[in-house]
Length: 255
Ligand SMILES: N[C@@H](CCC(=O)N[C@@H](CS)C(=O)NCC(=O)O)C(=O)O
Image (tube, rainbow, N blue to C red):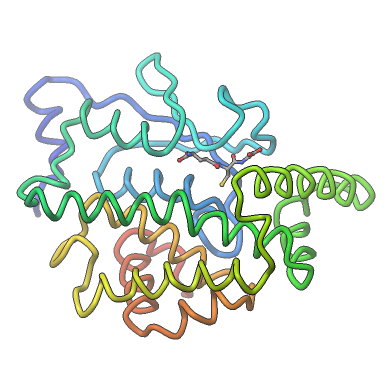
């Protein structure tokens, strides 16, 4: 059997890699996480073969920078999925991107930015502000609270999302324009994947942590928004999500 590169590293240094703790929301919708940023980090940890445990946080305001995810590793806290991946790549010398050309790395960086910084906000609108879907969000994220509190906390959280989307700019557009912008990203993503099994090519690379986290969050949860309809309409994207789930989170597949 092939040994994981982390085992080889431990054999050489004589010590086991320390256990990383990933602080994130509870799993939801049959996904490792309903936050694409949390799911990106967990996917990366699995792709890299790093040992980790998860710790559930219900209130992101308690996180060091007020957002999830963050990790604790070897006495250090690292916040933000971008900086977490950078930290893990450097500290554990993760070889996921080895051998990629400069042009491939640039394309991967642009795709990650589009998903992190653009489609994320379209999806946030769909979950929190499209009136057809807000009840699903309330029940999935605050279902653990007693009924009156669930509604109060949800209303507060939705107000924060509305303010954030307004400040970001997207929240100033009407619904059809917001969905139209998100669908453009989905079309771009589907065209970039083409017939390849992974965004990294024949094998998953670092970009696949981000792509999988966002696409699974668009396709799997039962929000029949124009974004889900558009993403599910691309057979290469749905097959990609299934392929990544089978490879990295087989415990989530129906028995
Ligand atoms: N740039 C950050 C974004 C993290 C982020 O926006 N997390 C959301 C969950 S998907 C959050 O914690 N939101 C809570 C809030 O804004 O109050 C990253 O890449 O980790």
